[in-house]
Amino acid sequence: MGNIIFKQSPIGELLDADEYAGVVKGYGSYFGNKDSDNDVIMKGAYKKTIKENGERVKYLYQHNMMQPIGKMKELYEDDKGLVFVAEIAKTQLGKDVVELMKSGILTENSVGIMPIQKENKRDYREITEVKLYEISAVTLAANEEAKILDVKGNVDYEKLTKRYDNICKIIRKGDISDDLGYALEAEVLKLKSLFIEFTKPTDLVTLPNVESKKDDLDMYSYLINSLKKS
Image 1 (cartoon, rainbow, N blue to C red):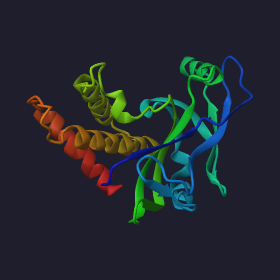
Image 2: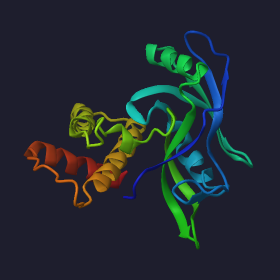
Image 3: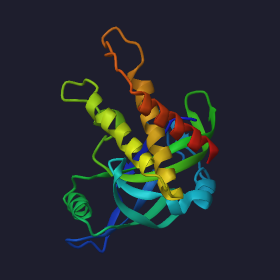
């Protein structure tokens, strides 16, 4: 399994918005420009994933699987980038998100993707195929790493553990649909990326010893094996 990464773009256009819901049209990512990670996503990179899994892609809030806010009405590539049209649900969160967009507080979209075909060039990485899991409305410079840091810049292990526990609860219920399985796969890859990033040895950080319950380890193994078979 590879790691899931996030690419941002401006929020786009808010259409037919009222105080309860709205429709958002925008770009999930752009083609041909080098981003802050020195990655360049090429035209055609989303074509296969849209065809195979486009109906599963949801619109989330802050890359949080537990906070879906809408469904995709349209999802396609044009010459500029990945275009999406999302219908925001008539929930309290949906209403809040629309208001945040209208007020200019939510300013960007971000895609959660796994690079499939990539090649290292002289000073950048060219990505020609990705697997798209979700598109999110995010605040400026929002990313998964920042979300699990506390105000002092330390890793918030409580938030990290809660996300893991949420996955375990869903799996224990059983009867996981294909759509939910797809979302769980994305969440596992996010957690994997975070654990890799924040368990790198440094001179400044000493990680605490964490005791894992056997049931949790068994559940994690079950999840990984199930995703490998899907």
